[in-house]
Image (cartoon, rainbow, N blue to C red; front, top):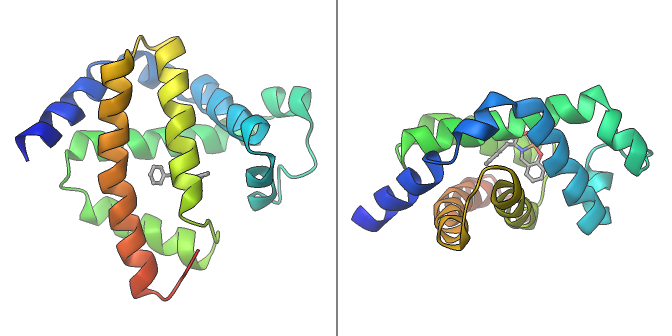
Length: 151
Ligand code: CUP
């Protein structure tokens, strides 16, 4: 819908600062996610034993956080035309990584806050990100259900 296109554009307008340093922002996102929702850290065997200080300096945390934000950047730029990007992602997250769908909602809220703090995304922009992610998450959920993954 036209409103959806405006949502993609509003978030993309603030993507520059994120894109300029995917690793630092990605580390912040995952570190904040693990702090606010400690159970999410257990989904990542490599990170499960790390404390707050170790997370902030951990290269693998930064690398995975960068991966997550790069994927989100690709999805934003696809503006809803994202089946080819999202299908393999949903597949691997259902069958290999086993990431229950609610974690995508949790990380959405964290990304909205971090973009508010670091990229000037205001309240309307944060709502635009939630709208975009609602579409992405609904599509992931469809694939999860096709695969019989009830996460
Ligand atoms: O790739 C990856 O790894 C992913 C990314 C994405 C997807 C979809 C959308 C956006 C982004 N991930 Cu990882 C995800 C997640 C995590 O890590 C955590 C939590 C939640 C989610």
